[in-house]
Amino acid sequence: MTTAPDAAAVRAACTRVLSYDPPQSARDVLRSLVAYARDDLEHDNFGTGAIHDQLERRVCDILGKEAAIFFPAGRVAQLATLKALCEMRGDRRVAMHPRCHLQEYEDRAYDHVYGLTAVTLGEPNRPNHAADLDEVRDPLGAIALEVPLLSLGCRAPSWSELTCIASRARERGIPIHLDGARLWEVAPWYGRSHREIASLFDTVSVSFYKSLGAMAGGAVAGPADVIALVRRWQQRLGAAPFQMFPLVLDALRGLQERLHLVPRFHERAVEIAAALSGLPGVFVNPDPPHATSMQVLLRGDPQRLITAALEVSSRTGIWLVDFSFPAPLAGYAMFPVTVASGALEIADDEVRDAIVEVQRLMSAEPRR
Image 1 (cartoon, helix red, strand yellow):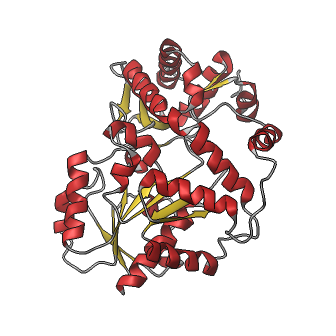
Image 2 (tube, helix red, strand yellow; image 1 turned 30 degrees about the horizontal axis):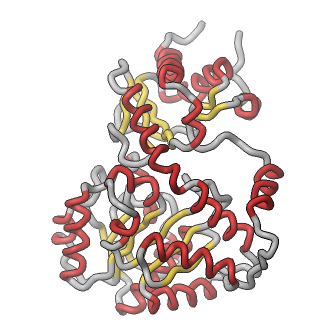
Image 3 (cartoon, helix red, strand yellow; image 1 turned 180 degrees about the vertical axis):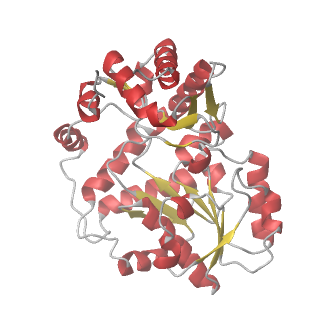
């Protein structure tokens, strides 16, 4: 009788990873950050200081916005922005996709913490269309658009749909906010600059810890009066610790050293999707990927995915699956792949052969 591999031991032994970056020790991360820091770096104070000014100017330059503010957590930045927009409008209703990050991953913080009310925008299983806004008759404090939608495999509206949504919001005088946690990652699919995409929106939130590889943090950019109110909400929420300069410095490093690599990450995601497409019992969503992330669906017993993936990883030295979640098709398992520097080190045939073997183990008759 064989026993299932120990996940922690297998993970520690894998020298290559399909998603994200190869693992680093905390000491290595701190050493690299110290090496990046200038000798004259000064610490900050409750969200202010030269290093904050530098990062916020950089974000404004990239996104073409008047003002910006750093937060230690991007989801707090986004919700503080929606609260500010609604407060300025005197209306607490926010139109949002039924499967957006605000709904599925944040335990309705927009309601419980910020006192905002969600208004459904669009249908659960597709990105938003311009016509969705026509279905919302009530006045709104703001519109929140997640592009791309994580829950749908990082699918995004077409460029024409996106521009139409923004145009209709402006015609109605409703502020429109971009949940751009994956703006860096979707820009190559659109073939547009970050500034051009951001120009469609009144406010934009971005993340520094995904493809940019920072430890944590995000920022929001928009008109100066809105950002001034967001800054007040940052203070009210206790989201401006005494010192944040390591996170701010890491965000600056990510923008300098990693932002230009993201188009290659997207290109690699498209290559991996092409390598998997057409394999029996394997589907990729979306195909081709709209961002650097995709969902991979494998036919077989969903309960056996993790065990099968651990067995293959222990043989190949390639970490394949971080976690799984329910698939929309019966008899399939689903897991995400988020391409960053780790996938650049793995050949297409290695990815394909590993996934084929995982799928075979999932579908094999159980040993008696």
